[in-house]
Image (cartoon, rainbow, N blue to C red; front, top):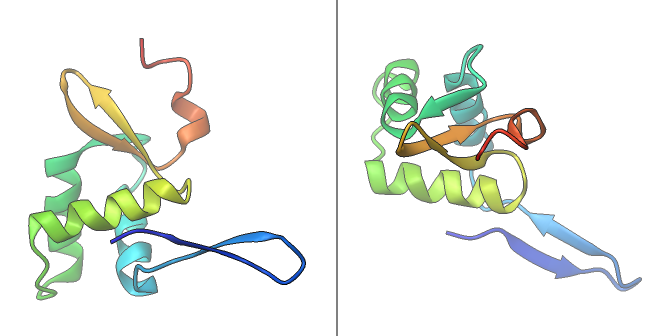
Length: 96
């Protein structure tokens, strides 16, 4: 699952989402007040919020990668584990 980039007749590049808005909004909602969250924790929060929406961990990761391609979230190394940030500009410079 990747973001689709298309060119308009005027030469502008537009990024089109392939993630259903409900899933994308719920992923962002899963962060709560967190700036950074472990991937597994974020997935558990997502499952708790959706209550009944069946989505595998791999599908969830695909959605996160799609959102990362569009700059909505950022993959980070958080205490040696995979984590995600919903505010990429807030964590720039803290990776090292």
